Each structure stands twice: as C-alpha cells, then as structure tokens.
Length: 392
Image 1 (tube, rainbow, N blue to C red):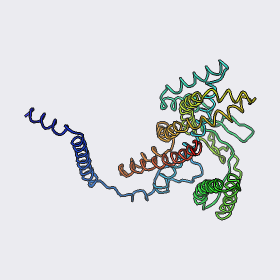
Image 2 (cartoon, rainbow, N blue to C red):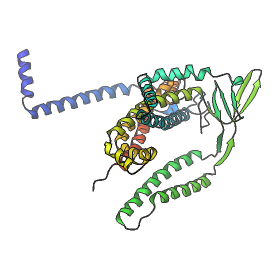
Image 3 (cartoon, rainbow, N blue to C red):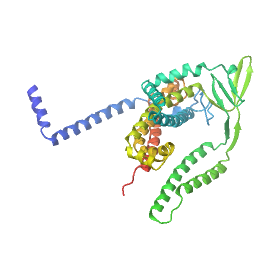
Image 4 (cartoon, rainbow, N blue to C red):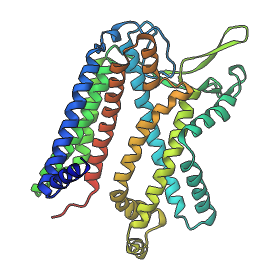
C-alpha cells in the first residue's frame, strides 16, 4: 500500500505540467468543498438586515456633527459609530504624520541631545503594545484630571476636567447637512480631476493655464453655491458650566472631546508616529549625499535645504511605507473598544448583544473597514503617482 502510494505521488510530480495540474485541481476541489460547507451552514442562519430598522435602545457619547438619540434605529447608531471611527482615524493620521515628521528629522539632527531624545522616543513607543499605551494614557492622565466642579477654566472658553476637554465650536444647523458633506466630497474629487485635465492641456499646448488656481477657485465657488442651496447656518457655540443641582454640574454648548477619545487619539498618534519617524529617517538617509552638498553649495539655509531639496525627493521613497501605517491606524482604531469609546466595533457589539444576528453585523464591519482602507489607499496611491518621476 505504501509502495503504491509512493509510486502514485512520484508519477503525479514527475513533470511540471503534472504538478501544476495536481495543485490546481486540489485547490479548486478544496474551495468547492469549503463553499458547499459554508453555504449549508449559512442556510440555517437568519441573514436578513431587517433588525437594523428597529430602535437601538442605547445612548452614545463622543458625538460630533451628529444628533443620535437612543430612540433612533440601529442603522443610525451604526452610521454614527462609523462616523466616530472615521473622525478618529482622520485626526490620528494628521497628528501621527506631524509627530513622525518632526521626530524623524530630529533623529538626524546634529544636536546630540535632540537626536538621542528622538531615539529614546522611538524605542519606547514603537516597542510598547498599542493597547498598553491606550490604557496607560487613559488611566494615568485623563482620568486623573480634576472633577468637573474643580476643573480648569481658561478665559471662560476652554474647560478641562475628567469629563473631557470642551472648546468653542461652530453650531451647524441644516436638515441637509449630510447632503452638503457628500457634495463637498464630490467637489473635492471633481477639483482633482479638473486639475489633472488642465495639466494634460498644458502638456500639449504652449499656453499654460494656472491649474492649481483654477481648481481652487472652482472648488470655492461651487462650495458657496452648495452652501446656499442647502441653507446651512453657522453660529459660534461657546461652552458653559451649569449647575443642575447640589454638586451636579454639566457642560452645555461647545465641542466636548471625552477622555476616551483623547486617550485613543493620543495612543494612536504617538504609536504610529514612532513608525513614521523611522520611515522618514530611512527615506532621507536613502538619498544621495550629493543632494545635500549641492544645496549647501548654492547657499540654501537648513530650512530651505530640507523643504525644497530633501523632503520632496524623500516623499518618493516614504509614501508606500507611510500608506501601510495609515491603514494600520484604521485597523488599530478598533482597540478603542477597551476603554469604551463609541466606535464601530463597540457599537456593533452592543447591537449584537441586543438583537443577535452576529454574522450580518460582522459582515457590515468587514465591509466598512474595507471601504475606509480602500479610500486611504486610493488617495495615497494618487499622491504617490504625482510625486514619482516621469520617464520621457
């Protein structure tokens, strides 16, 4: 039996064609069997999404540009949580990029103290798990802020306490707010396409049109038209500390950034910033030394040498790696569930506990994260294409 099996294996692996045929046949058979098994298992489950139209029945903190109530449907709760995740990801990407750029440049500083401090920062935050950092910032800093009655008050404009940070903000009133936001996204896309179209015209004609100015003017004019059509009004909303009873205080107005949001934002920013710092350092060191020497020979200052010569060329090297870090920010934002930030994964878990239907909810979670990652990838790939050298 063993000898026959050995002969059969040697026969099917004797030539490349037989090996490829065997591998392809085995792979297709495995996928077919797995698909049949998965279909049988899923046929016994309730996969409809009708449960999302029922009232959510739970409240949610960390709202911004949303007006979610516990009486709203579960799909509204899911969309609000998705917006909370997107807001966190966007701000964390901005902060982590700034931190990484500053630390990465400091890592190459000729000043011994600045260089070593940047090295210590990178070694500490890059080698500490992100979950540990989020919990540490939350417990060690934000929960140790004074009570709301004893909180810091800066010129009656900014309030700091263990309830969070409250700052003045614009109060936006309109029933067509989401239409305005969606329209602005379309205008941004059209502006980029218009810029590319004008750039193609400039490449084929002697007359040059100011592509950047025209695209910006187009965006501003269309934004004002959209603002007028949606009838959106902006008013300055100042925060106030009000008393609602003996030793009961609360904030009214302004923009409240809760301790959970601040802790997750700080953890994501400093953690991802440490990786981006190393990417920046490596990209700058990958450039030929002749670029720096040429910039010094024409009398450019350190700032001019960095912004005009070094960083524009280093972008071609660092953008692909930074794109991966931006995608990691999106995925790592789910760790906010540990400290109770109302993001996508936490709210989805609450809906599953109340209504069941775990498979449809996890399918929605996967699709949502995929869409966010695709948008980031498309934007970064476009930027990477713009900075790459063009071969004539």
